[in-house]
Image 1 (cartoon, one colour):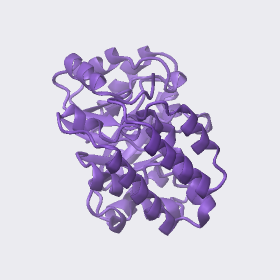
Image 2 (cartoon, rainbow, N blue to C red; image 1 turned 180 degrees about the vertical axis):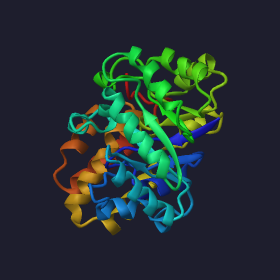
Image 3 (cartoon, rainbow, N blue to C red; image 1 turned 30 degrees about the vertical axis):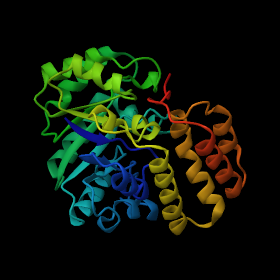
Image 4 (cartoon, rainbow, N blue to C red; image 1 turned 45 degrees about the vertical axis):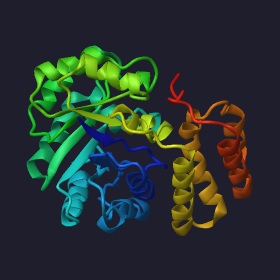
Length: 318
């Protein structure tokens, strides 16, 4: 099985990706948090830095683009092609209200005629391969049949399916029947994404879909960086490894972020997920979340490592 690392805005930038690869590895393909070009095709400096090859030297990286404007998509893809990229991923899965209100991300799934025009334009002129990360509709899973039929018209390099509709955000259970539908009705290479948090989740998915050969994990790896090691029967990383991973992330981010305040708020995001791997983590996570200085943050993190043990599996998502 091949493993992809899902993007998460504010967390899985190039420093995180490289550090995760160094400490844990096992990822076949990383996806960037989405690039959001303006109508002139311009990107923010932070977005450009995140995809520069020199900042991603040892990983297979696929940049992800969020837009509904074909010229912006094509200009960004051409720039990425000049950097040496051979694939770009179109985000049709983001459920954020600010995104979908602009008919971007999952919001474009509610207007299939507009989506068709957009796909016609980008597939006709894009200089590199295009994959898509999608949800299965806006309101109900029954929308997916028409969406999948549309995708089947194009030479996608891969279709990453998060089998929820936009209105579900990340709640409820993924609609595995929609992924089964895709396996029966398309020859596009498929990747499954959704709620793979623990080894038993991986096993349940493998049992249900023994022929599926690619999965994307995001929150599962953030809440348990050693999840794939456990799934493959390897020794799980201990507290010493996780502490070293955190310390390395901290120092590498310190080098590029301006001031302790920016560093503090950036590092806090990780503990929304990682704290769930520790016993009795709630009060420690609260202190980390409410820390107003970097020193208070570090005191909370150090206490969690010193006073609690690692669970055999994360409780994130329970």
